[in-house]
Image 1 (cartoon, helix red, strand yellow):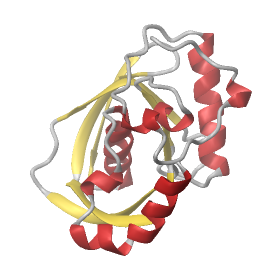
Image 2 (cartoon, rainbow, N blue to C red):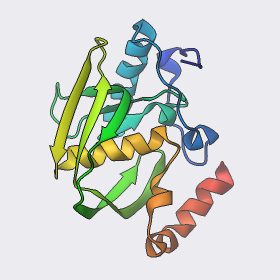
Image 3 (cartoon, rainbow, N blue to C red):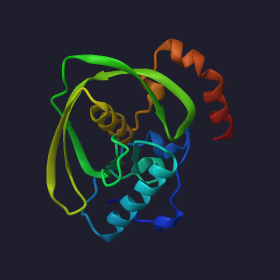
Amino acid sequence: MAVEAPNPADLKIVRYPAPVLRQVAEPVSAVDDDVKAVASRMIELMHEAKGVGLAAPQVGLPWRMFVANWTAQPGEDHAFINPELLDPSRETGPHDEGCLSIPDVTAEITRPLGITIRATDLDGRAFTMTDTGTLAARVWQHEFDHLEGVLILDRMTRLDKMANRKAIRAMEAEG
């Protein structure tokens, strides 16, 4: 982990065009108390914002970690540390996506319908999950994109870019 852990209480969701959103995140070297505290705070922020996922770069940390809860059920929060995406399905499909760091912007994003993810959990154990066509696969890919410095803005169609141009320019002007 190249960046020291901040006080988790100080974390907040950063907005586009914050430079950290365009950085490739650094691997997390160990699952320690700081990582667990940051993940816990990220889960709180995700729920407060009514999101289904939140990546560390979205709270200003260039760490390869994200949290997600694609079921909206209590107790279904997951942390993915140093995730890898494997075996994307050949079948793709479009679906509307938004982003907590790019409020008021949605776009139809085409992604593989199924994918496998391999990561480490908050107990330091490696795990693998596969999803074929539900929201989980989409959430994993969206959050993984954040770890690569990729935003939904990069995956939008030209039509979606035009439809959201005013909101995007307003954020860039504030940024």
